[in-house]
Amino acid sequence: MALMTPNQFEESLKKMKPRVYMNGKKIDSILENPNTRTVVESNKASYGWALDPKYKDVMSCYSPLINGMVNRYTHVSASKEDLVRKAEAGTFTAE
Image (tube, rainbow, N blue to C red):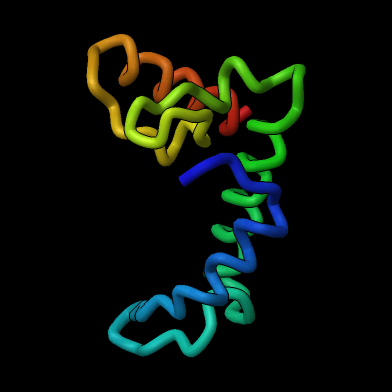
């Protein structure tokens, strides 16, 4: 999946209509539920950082699967270095 803006990411979730359960109860909309909305917002932030020239080296990478740039979190790791970079991205977003 090519790089998206944060809003494009949210729109893609609307189209997917994911089936999510939390504590045995079905979540009707991950976009409206306050518990899952925080996860959506965190992921949206990662898409914004991937497009920001200041953070793009950490939060995006080239994918040979699509012959283009992708969000680091959606990249299929193919090497130890890929895994290290994904861990660095996770450390960055946790700060």
